[in-house]
Each structure stands twice: as C-alpha cells, then as structure tokens.
Image (cartoon, rainbow, N blue to C red):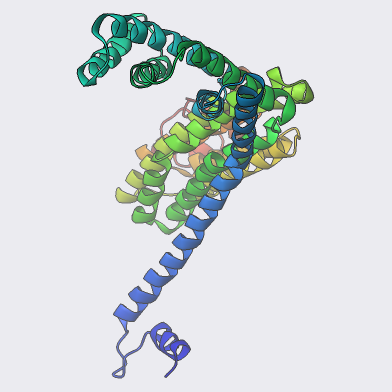
Length: 419
C-alpha cells in the first residue's frame, strides 16, 4: 500500500472490528496541527524578514559609506569605529537615532577619559583593563547615563587599553569615527534612503492587531460551543502580546523620527497621526479583551447562560480590529471599523436584555469598554466614544424598562459601565 493509501486508512478512522480508530484520529489531528504550525512559523519568519529588510539595507549602506569616508577622505588606515557607529546608530535604537548618535559620542568621551587617565597612572595589562572597565561603568552610572552610554564607555575603555600600546593617537580618530558613523546613519535615514514610515508602521501593526482579532474570534467560537479549553487557549495567546506591542511602539517612534528628519517624508506626518494616537487605546483594548476572554472562561465553567447575541458581539469586535488595520493601511478614515464596534455594542445590549449571570455581565462590560477603546483608536475623542457606546447599547432603554422587564432577575438593574 502506498503512502496515500496509508493516510486514507488513518482518515477512515475504523478498525477491522468496527470500533473507532481513536489513535488514528489523534495522529491525523496532530499531523494537521503540525502542518498548520509550520506554515505559520514560515509566514512569521518571512514577515520578520520583510519588516527588517529596509533597516538592513540602510545599515549596509551606512556602514559602507562610513568606511569609505573614514578611509579615503580622513586617511584612517583602520576605519573600524566609523562603520560600527553607523550600524549601532541604526540598529540599536530604532526611533531614537539622533539620541543614539549623542549617546555614542558621550560614551566614547567617558571611555577615552577614564582609559587615558588610568593608563597614565597604572599602565596596561589584565588587571589594569579590569580596573579601567569597572571605573568607566561606575562613572557613567554615577553621572546618570543611559545603558547605551554605559556600554559604549566600557567598550571604548577596552579599546583604549588594548590598542593604545600598538596604535598611536587612537583617541582622536575614535571621536571622529563615532561622530562620522552617527552622522552617516542619520544622513542615510533622512536623505539617501528614507523608509516609507506608513509602510513600516503597517507591517509592525499587523502582528499586534492580527493577534487581537484572532483571539477575539477564537473567544467567540468558544462561547458558541461552550468550549472552555478553546477560550483558555485564546486567553493565554493574547497574554503573550508584549513582543507585538513593543514592535508597534518602536515602529511608531521610528516613523515619527523619519517624518521629522526626512524632507521627503514630511507629507506623511498627517497620516502618521492616526497610528501615533492609536497605540495607547490599542494597548488598552488588548488588556480589556484579556479580561473579556478570562471572564468568558469562567462563564463557561459556571454554566451561566450565554445568549446568542453575545458570541456575535465578540466576533464583531474581532472584525472591527481587522477593519481598523485595513483602513489605516489604506490611509482611509476608519468608518467601517467604527460601525462594526458599535454593532458589537448593539449585539451585546441584546444579550444583556435576554439575561446573563455575573460573569456574563462582566463580559458585556468589557465588550463595551473594548469597543470604546477601538473607537478612540479610530480617532474619536474618549467622551464622544463613550456617548456612542451608551447610545448603541440602548442604556436609557435598559434603565427605564422595555425588553429587560421580561427577566428582571437575570442581570443587575443597571447597564454595565464603560471601563
């Protein structure tokens, strides 16, 4: 029997005596999960490569130019520090490259000062090197320097101690190369090869927003099927959001810097405003969605009623996140995302009217709060977003009677708050 025949045998899931082949079913399920995971891993890796491609090209160009200028124009026979400074400026602090250049020069200054002073008094050697590095680090920390300056000071001190005996006048070229490398990096990012800041942010935002929308979808499906394990998996995955949010925040800072330094990207400043102002409410939406999903797990565990509109409301939130990303990427006003957020609130208002338990009321409150966060992320002021949420929920109707009177004991007497 060939390979396809064996797989078909596993899929049939029956033994000769008619019993279900549970092992075969589990193996087939595990293989399908592995195939899906390998595709997802490859997709994630390719996405990271595409995201870093522009930065890699910038770093290569800056390093080459720094080496060329230091070697040919400044006649430096060993132009090592200039390309290192250029790459360090570009790669170490995306979004803070001007600050990084200043930190490089400050670190070099501290390292040269400490290294020269101690070499003059104690000479060179292993224990002298240890003393110089320790002193450079402690002096930098005492002065309140950042981590980047401390590292640069220690590295420069090492170079001064180890290379000074064989290389004359090392200190001045080190200063010049640090300044040159940082300047070339800024020149490349601002003039020669400025990245499209909107494209950079779109690529960085996709993992964070996809994570949020996917787990909200998973939570909606879990509520429909009362699948506690599926809801728990969604909760655990959503909690692993630090990397995605950090990448988004860093990309926003980098894009703002590019739009400030690069004349070719000045026209993008208005478009970047959406993302810059959306970072905080997206972070809040992540946290509030986590509470929503956690309470969904409890709701399933406690066998509370799950009105049919409730999973639909969570699914509408997921779609709102997807639409927000798409409309931001297209540079459009996120009207559809706003409409879907309000639809989620309307659906959860219907669920509230049908009757929910304690955890269900918390889920409803978190749907309202998350919808408000997404509205703020779309560019609406917080007060107006809260008003729209109350209106879509039908809060006045719930407080004064109407559909809620059918089952007054099923939920608290007032609508759940926003936030």
